[in-house]
Image 1: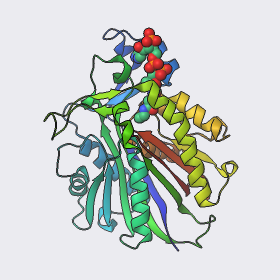
Image 2: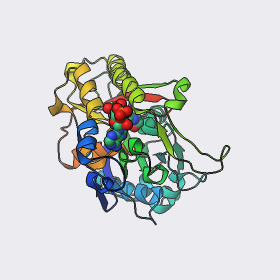
Image 3: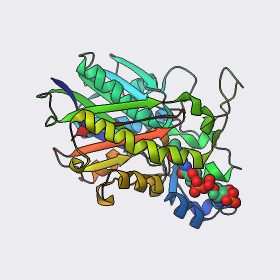
Length: 323
Ligand code: UT7
């Protein structure tokens, strides 16, 4: 059976680091509130002339170097983003050009914070169907461009960045001992559109708009739905929660991550945490966390990883893979 295994990872964070205290003289907020309610201590913001594709290209080059392959050996590029440079063409085609890849195909996936999970499921299905042998998957975002800087309940939460993963086809036995993606679980429920959305767009206002969120309601959905989707994906893979070596969660809020780990009965030592340094980077958050942990040598070959995310839509899901 064909499996999609991780061959390499990479990431890029813009140079500018903004500490929580930066917001204190601009808004009625404090470092203490942000830390205790979210676990966020700082985030990176892209420079004025840096676009989402620029972040994606840096992360892509790092992942190719880590995988030890060239752009010419990639069949497809998928970028998960909700903050594209332009309405079209896709960020993925811009990354394709940026890394010097002249063949294959490239497209974007938009499922907001769950975007990288959707992209992983997409790439896994294509690899298993034989449509591609190697796919470069990127989560890249510049959420600083859609913040309302007068809204303390959102603008302190998000950051910019990009992470990338190279997936490659490999033969497996077709059971849970295989390396690579073992199961995926995708969900959405459009009736919750007003909980987390951007109040602008091409066909409505003709502007990019600003992010709006009813944070406490999203929080409740997150705590309930993330452990559920992770358990479903583990069931599909034929694995028990006790067999999980690493949870690589969407990095939105430390309290959500802790609640999910508790519901999965996982100790926090098994959870990859980058939320303190990155804030919420939406679709970039999981590949960033995965790449940071991999660059620190934390994953051993054969480890079981569970990645999960929820965001605007609502859209949520999870992926189980063996490193
Ligand atoms: O990535 C997509 C998925 N998104 C998420 O997962 C985000 C989910 N939501 C959250 O992480 C949390 O709900 C927040 C961090 C956004 C908010 O934390 P909370 O504990 O749910 O707070 P809250 O919204 O219930 O607000 C509590 C209080 C309010 O004041 P009152 O009404 O009690 O007087 C807010 O106005 O905290 C106030 N508040 C702030 N205070 C200081 C909200 N933002 C701030 C702030 N600084 N930045």
